[in-house]
Length: 227
Image (cartoon, rainbow, N blue to C red; front, side, top):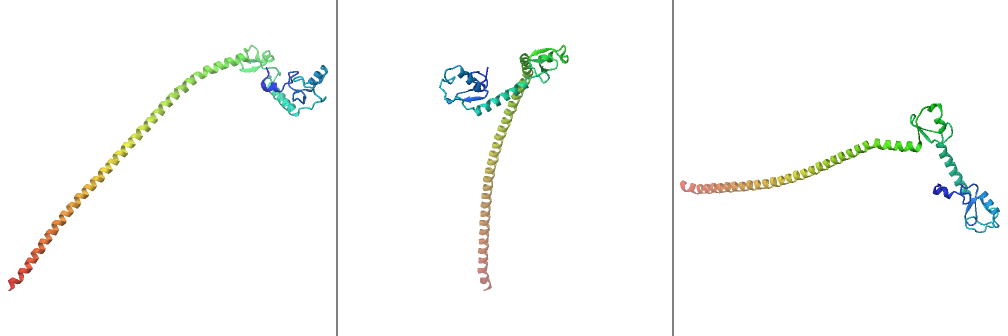
């Protein structure tokens, strides 16, 4: 079955890729040979698709469509060539189980593959896919297990970070309280020191005043003795 892009490049008459495509005034395109053959069998030059009568006996070639078709055919030929045996140019329809390679029917009967085991390519692909899936299953289980270990480590990492953040907050809070206590203690001791200073200064002043009074008394009694 042709793909959507291949259908767009197919002539509506022959259902094959356009060969020398021409385009009518109604915008429909056909192979030049297909259109001429169609017109020879009809009384009028009508479009094979929409039945519009064409006044142009030799419609112009669609160069864009021609280039697209040539590019598509070249790509398809290259793609088909890749699926051919490089020795016999036959389709690679078999898989050699002994050599683990794709081969054609000619290769199968060659001396190189004598007594070898073969499988059709689709069966070999299915078997290889099944083997690969079976081989991948332990890896998938291991990846699943590693993911769980990774999730566990991430949980521990987040928990350690959370505990560290809480501990850091507690330490900062304790030091802040300690700083406040030390500041209060400092202020209290400074207050006591200032009070002691004031008391000592007051006593010294009182003692100085008492000495002054004694000196004054002595100064006043001195003349009386001399007289």
